[in-house]
Length: 631
Figure 1 (tube, rainbow, N blue to C red):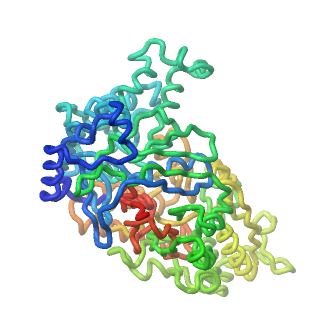
Figure 2: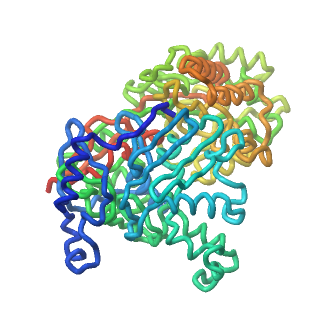
Figure 3: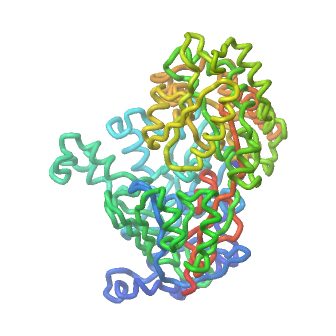
């Protein structure tokens, strides 16, 4: 994480303006709520907002907006309704546009030594159904969810454990909560600020009716057919703050989902109790509704080019840019190019936990991984698919990072098919009469590379790599599947090599956790069983038995307790060096710009931005609640 102390919520002048507006009752109401307010179904804004709302300060190129309008977007599947939580980006603390962590839902937070975090809530803050948001919502999560064995069989989230130690959670008063550990927890704030955040609170008033502790009949009559699964299953079904698929669940996000899946069109309406305002007293969000239409992911670029989306980046690739530019005048939109911050736009992940013993031994031989990397003509990929605008090299931090070194990007990544062939010869992978190599047990050396099937771009890259590898005697076959199928095949040890993007935060600095580089998560496709072993405390998966993987684990642990920035930087550099030398993930191309299609009448969307999952939450750090329509 960024090692800062964060206290204030907004500049004093803006805070004063908000306080004055509240005192005078001069908040500007969204017109769409006027009838509900007149009928007494909603109180006026002065009584809906916290006593100290968060005030939006326009950045350069932004301006105070106007209420109204529907924002249309396209999603590739029903479960992507969760993007409303990602884009809405209401968090206890969140990243601003400069990637600094600042209070958001919280009025303030006092962080001492990365061990003690005292969080102050906004007095008068309310859930979307008008019920108070207080420290009891934090107590409910900790006592009745995280530490309830039926709801959380494995105990509190691992993000809240420091070397196995849970936090001390104190409810100091109605607006104050304290989390503390005996050792530093540098991940606490970044996890709460994440695209898929750690929620340490729940709407207690809603969920208590599904909890056996508060309702002896929980899981009974109101659950219908679900009663057979027990009350815990019903509670977990109702409690999906990130999935956002339960319209009845109160939220703190700027928009509330009103559509229960499955559906082909999701409608989210403004949260009348949202805690942000602009400097003139207008309650945010500016936009009344967000409408997400489900479309086949392969058709989304065409539908976007036809003007069916007001704001679109999801399921659009760089190779759609030329097509999208052509439709701008006809369909009244503009196409921006935002930077990306991933360590690699396209990377290959040899599965070091593959079940087949012959393949496992081969993938664990660093000479084989280096040969695969050396045999890729990255320049060809860059010129043919990305007009030479991308960056060629390993999966590592990008040039804008203070940790960047050229050798991390170039080691074993320069096209050299002779050197690659020699490494394969040294391993003993003999060629047959047709020039194709064989595995040590005599089988053809044929590698199936699996993708999530969401992008023809990946297929195009693999086609060029296929030709490169053929020249050194290796046959490559691409196998598109579905995202869930791909991950399950990797996790189970069935997949040989998979394709995904690289390091999520290529803009890392010494004070950001290097955990992505250590085998601590099953989601890491090169060693999923190592990660599972860590996540389950050794109850599942496989213990790391590769020396460099073990070293990465130790370095990651050392970083968490490193007392100085200099020491943290040394740890980062050693971890980046190991990855460059070992080629655990084979990066191909990075720095591929992300096309962002924006309706011409949609304002406050930055012309230049960074499109990144975490940190960034894609559009989230630019606060879409401040986007508005000029017509």
